[in-house]
Image 1 (cartoon, rainbow, N blue to C red):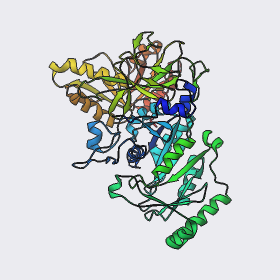
Image 2 (image 1 turned 90 degrees about the vertical axis):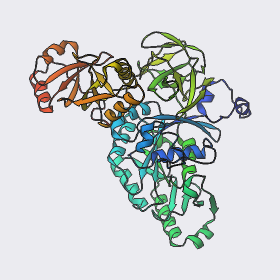
Image 3 (image 1 turned 180 degrees about the horizontal axis):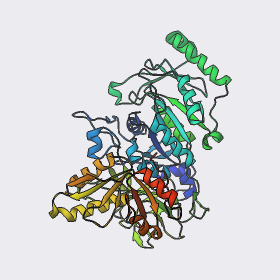
Image 4 (image 1 turned 135 degrees about the horizontal axis):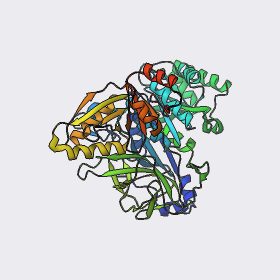
Amino acid sequence: MCPAFVGARQWRRYGGQVNDPREQAARRRTFAIISHPDAGKTTLTEKFLLYGGALGVEAGAVKAREGRRSATSDWMDLEQQRGISITSTVLQFPHRDKILNLLDTPGHRDFSEDTYRVLAAADAAVMVLDAAKGIEPQTLKLFEVCREREIPFLTFINKWDRPGRSALELLDEIEERLVVEPTPMTWPVGIAGDFRGVIHRGTGAYTRFERTARGSTIAPEEDIDAERAAAEEGPSWVEARDEVDLLDSLGRVVDAKTFLAGESTPVFFGSALTNFGVRFLLDGVVDLVPSPSPRLLADGGRRALDAPFAAFAFKVQAGMDKAHRDRVAFVRVCSGRFERGMIVTAERSGRQFSTKYAQTMFGQDRETVEEAYPGDVIGLVNANDLRVGDAIYAAEPCSFPPLPAFAPEHFMRVRVKDTSKFKQFRKGITQLDEEGAIQVLRDDMGETAPILGAVGPMQFEVASYRLENEFGAPALLSPTNYMIARRTDAASRDRLRAMQGVDVLARDDGTLLALFESKYWMDRVIADHPELTLERMVAEGGL
């Protein structure tokens, strides 16, 4: 079940107005966690929930052993089998007097389109780095998305309990490769693999950690004065103090203005596995991540926080409730006060629908939500008209900038194995398409054997798994000769189709994609026929 939040009666004690969207928004922190695979993102997510009081006293394991819980954020069976995150999830929990909306993202490049959409709903991000590996290819690409979307980010250097690189070397790499100034808020005492505790840059205080069994409970902390630290930690303390003095002399202090501008990143050191430093990072999220602000509209204006209710859908997911097989649209509230049961309008279709089945999400678990405010993420169950990127509103119409689609780089034709299961197959393909889990392209074979377009090949594995296990329609996937796609239009379609090595397929939203069998042939067509429409898609090549 979802944890209980600070109630209305408590909020009045803080001097706030319970129904004021601006004051309620000031309590929210909506952020995503991003990382290269295996950097420890899912483990850190689980420990955030532990320190936020959302898991009781014990955190789950990322790779569940017999008799142990699986990670809260990895709710899909395939995720638990593979030990990786392949779909984004929403987790909401309290910390101090704030409400945190944590958006967990897939780390694998093949699911980067999902990550991109989630970042559109976040106000900041936490970037997780492996202390031994530093900035890896996916980390760099995710950072570039943050920069493009002007999302400020904090950095957590994880796995300091294991052998790794020096702290100063990692700071240099962040500065050189990301072109941002790293400003540590905590500094480790002890080299990577011999983690004793951290020095707090703001106060100079030292906190020493103690291990717990498998890191399943909150790590005991002990505040120690400098004299005692020098006596008990010896050379490790002296080295850490010298490094802190160097950072002070270089002026590497946290600055809110440069952080929000994406010019600097506050840095924390720790170990998600042992829980060392997790609480300090969580405090940093509360203190540094900006609360929701007026949202940019498609016309260039901004939606005021206290304007009538409006939100946009950034994710659609089916199969989260195995008992009911329902469909959930995740929407980020941008303005006003949401009340369950209110009638809202979908901007794209113009249709109205009731929000009677509105829920707060906690991984796979959920419970009915009665109200929500800017920054919150709510799940609208069986809002079947909603698609990814759609705006909804209660009174004043509005439209938000569209969420970009990635160019597919891999293509497979899909057929149902058993033709008696075609109805289930068609339903499954439609659902995957509406979720944005994979792109469904149709040619002359129509719904019988559409072509699936993916950013990465693992998307085909997930699609095949879900068709069989969620919809009862095992499918056959066969390769095609297509290698690259470009967006085109109706005026160019017939001429392109008349050429060898190219075809034009349609998505359900009406977008036409020209598929080429080689990049060389595509480049030649572009050079020889500049009058044809062949546009690169946003975020082509994945993250």
